[in-house]
Image (cartoon, rainbow, N blue to C red):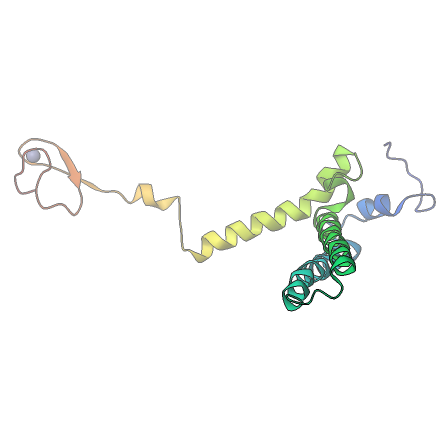
Length: 167
Ligand SMILES: [Zn+2]
């Protein structure tokens, strides 16, 4: 796709967003994310309700034939909703190109950038919270040389690990 100095006229929504230079997830994508979530929840509830109503109607053989068929359809609809919801949600979080709907590697990278930066930020926050400083642990190791044999021992060791004498 050539970058041409046209105005906003004739550009697609996605190109305009790209040129806008905002590296955050757009409100449309956030909406898609939540709509997808809602679809997954509704689908899940529909799917689960099949088993709940099946459990409730145990011993009731009055309409076994039609009941089984409608609950089977309901289970299918529920599963379909869950899958469609997951799909819409992934579009929302990764963008159209990032989710593989639009095959455009360059746009996929643009779409995935805020998503991966968000993920990276979460990992960094988790590390900060755990108070892990991966850089300093190595530098802080101090060894003591044994007076009699020259073996290097840990800073807090009382006896030499090589000859057993007091460090
Ligand atoms: Zn020693």
